[in-house]
Image: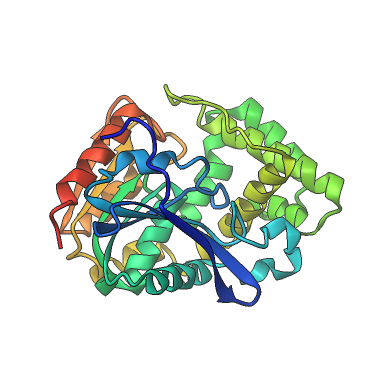
Length: 316
């Protein structure tokens, strides 16, 4: 397998209506087993394409998407704040289906990392007949409990950083911290949005800092940072647009037959292993592998991800 990402042989912007264009790219074997990769965030984008390194390029037709409002998709969320309410998990699921139809793919392996696992699960539950297998890394369901842990309760471990985060939020009486940041990033004047994005990302870097492989998030520029922070807070303040307590887990009967590998780090303090464990309990066709020495990613987890792809390569 190459030690550098395989460059896309095709890419494009797909019009999905309402002025939205979704960036997609395809790499690997055009006649290979179709596989979809969903990035984290929300709002981080595909980046430089390192995800392609995990797939055997001779076996897989690998499709990546910059989710609505970020990366190379257009318009960026920060350039169309008046339409931010249209950016929902349901819209992202529809975008994925539009790309699948455009590429003429019948079924594909669906994989994701972090937020991308929530989106992968939501997509699979909406379209189980389109999913052949799943590989999920750093598993989330973006439930209210998970968001409140990330933005409130985990502050017990990082009280100094959390106090700075809370003080900078500008929250109003009765407002959750995530709601305050979402309000400011979606509606305040430009300097305030830039500062709010910086303060939000400082907290993101703090709560993953115990990960042995932690590296601070790096953004190309202030606009990329604002896009990320705007979309993360937009989705998290709305419980991932998955209404109802533990919506993903409650609907696991829809995909319990789909073979899956769940990979998670024991040291992922900002995303405790309870989430994939609960999913696994309700997912008869899943395998859960906990990496004892890593947190929200790392080289061992990436290697297990590659092995999972290889294991599913012969599946229909």
